[in-house]
Image (cartoon, rainbow, N blue to C red; front, side, top):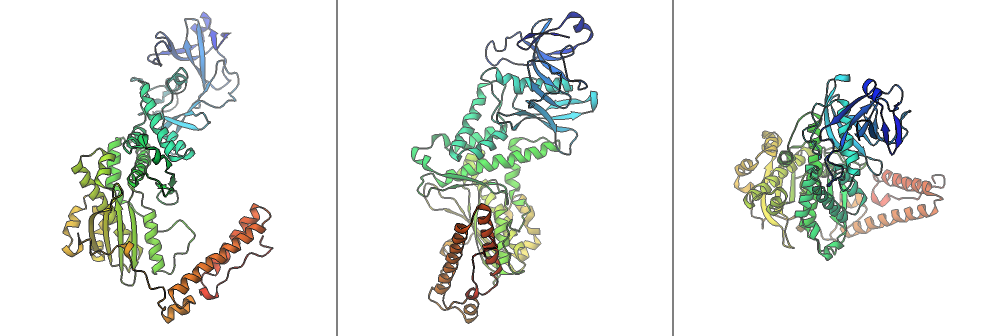
Length: 571
């Protein structure tokens, strides 16, 4: 066996080198992190034999060859796709966490990912790989990654794959300023752990740091996110803008996209900046998911191609019309069910760029009206590096496509809907009013003849809009009633006898008073029940009991409904 000299160094005798050892010295195994580190004449590779290994495992070691007789052990690699940093040989299977491992994608025998263990123990994806063949004949090719393997990443034997991956992703970053780049997983981790504005600045700083290492390139999706955040002015926010309390929400139950909101009502942060931040994050998330899906199928696509595809086909998605909640949807084909379906459709739109949609429904008349706020040309130009003219066309097409998606949602929400009106305005800048973009009307006959406008939603919708009758498109905005200007009923007007009997109120004002009293009564019951609870479990049980009692009484006329605190046995 080899003689251990300390400091990870073994001396291997001549006879052992000749008869019981296998090794490979690799070209370009490690490029210098900085001048002299590692030395220009340093040699690295893998070594098998003479150094103890766990019995029956067949593992090998990643090593530095110091001279003809001496080697320095860096890591042990088993035959299960795992590498463990060590200075000495293992006689038993390692009891320490793995520092690098490879794993095939679920359900795949040829596509996988190389991972390293992060500082907190969580896995960090470093590179995809493909595998061909099996057993001793298997060959591995490292896919697109942030590290430049200088042409040595194709058709590798298992030993070569694990050695090059360990040296690049684990060992080299320990030598100096070279660090693992700020990858996709790290972006998500920072977004969930830090407040949003500091997190966004961290993303920019870490992405920029990658540029200090000539062999390392940030993931294109991360680089693009950083570029967009810089374009949105995040590094240059004024002191007063730092007061913004941005809250990041991911709508996991619905579209699973990001929503950004400023919780500080006195904040001076422009609304357009918030929209640009949200767009940058959603483009990052949706593009990364699309690239991953294509990669799992063995397909290659560029970042620009994926983003263009997402923008062009965003309105072509099939939208679920059921809310992810326990709320009742109302009577079949009724007003509440239709409103619930429309609201669910809006919540479930997975859009790369924010579109705000408000609607008014008059089911007896068979009409729905949407007011949309959409990105303007300046935002499109900033996000997608377009000229002013190209951005204007892109902004209008996006608004028209999403408008048709809203029409589809409304028409599917109830068979009683016969007409949908759209009014679109681009978001105003610097405190100015929103800018009129277009208005249009669509009837059910046209909707059904056009297969739900699916082709137009996935392509160019301008021809459809231009084909509408004059009275259905580009109407005078001054004549288009605004949802914000919806007339409110006279609070003292008497309700119809039928409504009065059902609601137990004579006027709208009486109904409002009763509604507020009911809320107050329920709140008082909740407060009393929680105060009387002996522990958290009892408090939760009390809240659930009151919730159940409230829902159980919802079918009663309001003037007969009552809510009682739970009995002692319920607690």
